[in-house]
Image 1 (cartoon, one colour):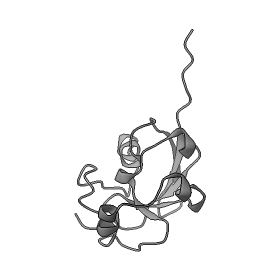
Image 2: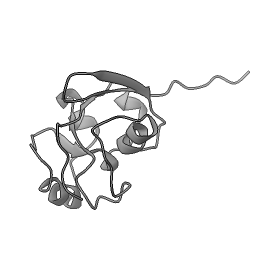
Image 3: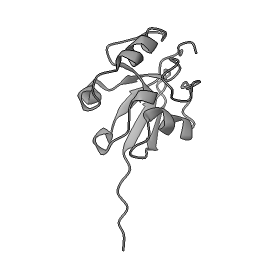
Length: 114
């Protein structure tokens, strides 16, 4: 009998404080997990091409070291995002791994421009 590996559990909290827990597939991006689970406040207009800032999120600082630094392209796109913070990332640039199980992600009140 095959055992199914547990999927990483991610909690997305919107700007009003409403939290939604989702099971994410290892290997997909945080943006894909959010879109698949109808997370509000995350527009993802470019579909994950790192060509807009409409999937901007705030990452739980305890997990930042597990996902590596933002690339130069991501940093450039974050300049179009609203209310950028030290823990700001584009969710399309973060691959879900087992190490991200329990990750908390917040969405800002407004997203950047496409």
